[in-house]
Amino acid sequence: MCIGATLVDELYFCEQNCIPHTSNPAVKTTSIGGVISNIAQHLALLNLQPSLITALGNDADATYITKCLQDKGISLQESNHAEDSTGKYVSILNTDGNLVVAVCQDISIKYLTPAFLSTKAGYIKGFDLLIVDANISAESIQWLIDFARANEQKIIIEPVSVAKAGKLAKLNLEGVYMITPNEDELVAMATIESTDEPTLVAHFLHRGVQQVWIRKGKEGSVICGAEQSLALGVPTIAILDSTGAGDAALAGWICGYMNGENERTCLQLAHTLALEVLQIKGAVVSSISSDQLTNIKNNYYHE
Image (cartoon, rainbow, N blue to C red; front, side, top):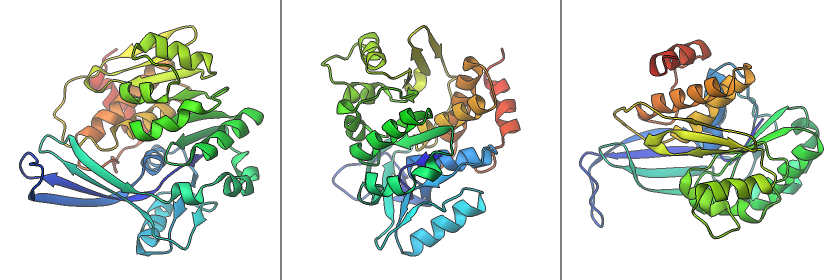
């Protein structure tokens, strides 16, 4: 079960390195986005049959999103279809594919409230694994954490950004299966004044999180638990577009986890899908399958 924001993504790729305070020639691409929808789309491609609870408006963007996601096998039956405009994410990227700036208009906080989620409690209870992004309100995240703990479900929280990761700072994280911050988000989520990674990991384990998965860009990532840590590097590649790489990593990890792979293989699959996303324009590798992901993983990691 995936819960969070769904948006229309508009990405503008500058033809030369972006110059601030002036107009920059660019090429535009449009796709379905939002962290949780990026994850759900990859999970559907990997044959994991995800369901999605999100907030959509009553406009053409909502019709486009609904048809595309349903055609991919993603259930939207319990989503909130509101009398509003569907959210949108607009980003500016340099010629190397790295993000310059982005803006986002999102209706998730307004409509994915604890009151709304409580009407879907019977439906949500039917899933073993909940994936939640921090686009929704802190109150809704807390409701889902408490609900998952009460019903013995595993919940993974994707912080989304530094600004949104701050929502988790004051929450009761007891029982959260995993959080997936990058190094800056890790600091933003903490209630202590520290940038020391081991100190911060210990802080979150003390707050009740079972695993902290820290994304480190070109240095790879590390998953830290109470008893052990697992670090994995990544090969050097040419990056075309950095959008959605973290979302893809989580989807790749879930693919391995749901198929009973060991922790190292799960992390390799995570990195593999992220690497593939970094080499395309957009956040979703539209042709990937579970078998293809494994084969590509074997090219990156020869163990």
